[in-house]
Length: 60
Image 1 (tube, rainbow, N blue to C red):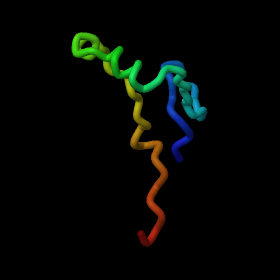
Image 2 (image 1 turned 90 degrees about the vertical axis):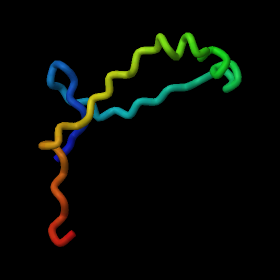
Image 3 (image 1 turned 45 degrees about the vertical axis):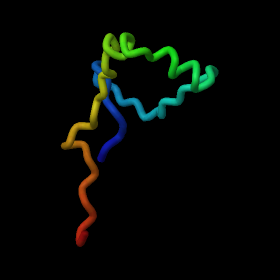
């Protein structure tokens, strides 16, 4: 059974992430120039371990 993502210490985090944005969309789009996009570093996404996935229900 999947019970959240495990961090580097092996603990489980079941909390959802929520971010509030106070700037207008135009200001955000203006910030992300081609130069800034080229220097941006991708987010390190952690996917659940396939062994922790819930098994498929029988008969489906």
